[in-house]
Amino acid sequence: MSELCFNTMNRSAYLLGDEDPDLLGQIRAAARAGFGLIGPDAFSIQAFCAGGGRVEELDEAIRAAGLRCFELPTLAIGSDDAANREMSRELFEIAKVLRPDFVQLNVESKVETPVLDGLRRAGDLFGAEGMGLAIEYLPWLPEIRNIQSTRALLERAGVACAGVLVDSWHFFLSDDSWEDLDALPLDEISYLQFDDHPPLQSDDLVAETLGRRVMPGEGHFELARFCDALRAKGFEGVVSCEILSDATRHMDLDEFAAQVYSSSRRFWP
Image (cartoon, one colour):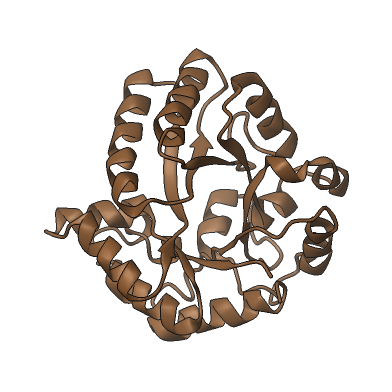
């Protein structure tokens, strides 16, 4: 049975601005809902620390709740080499404490020398500590926007600890095909992110993905086929549940976590 991970991005400081994302409350709610893994996002961790908290406190809270940190979103790699170095350094300081299995990574620019250098440097830094890099493609990015382009990047960069993060949202709303998913080798998959979505209301994919996702089974994605395709190749890895929704962003934490867990578990029994 695939383990489920509670992803905190729905109440991330990235989306809430100055509002408290209540990371400690999310940790407790995730545990009460039945999750064994959690993915606290770096934006909220930094906000927690800016308010006087320490990463060590989060680590203690995660352990006290019976959880383990599985993923750390998000490391952005782009055309600015100095910015790549600084962000990698900042996330590494967090990762040394929380010990995630994977650091989630997005490539925000065309794949040129700073991107390749930044990816390889991150691979050396996090890989030396036993952590992997999970490259999440996004359909609106300049180049790394589907399975094929992500696999091409992996081959070109040659980073042993890096793999593909397949998010159901990005799979269904990119130009990925079922053939692309079938051709993706099991050993190139870091883990999955899981969610659903109603029909698009606009061509603004960023607004849609941040504000209109729904619980698995409540949208129109062919999630059963998606799950079957991954199980057919032998996938038994971690499924990170990432429901980003304006409608649920201020829902009671326990109610939200419980709905995310139960709706996702139906697809990953």
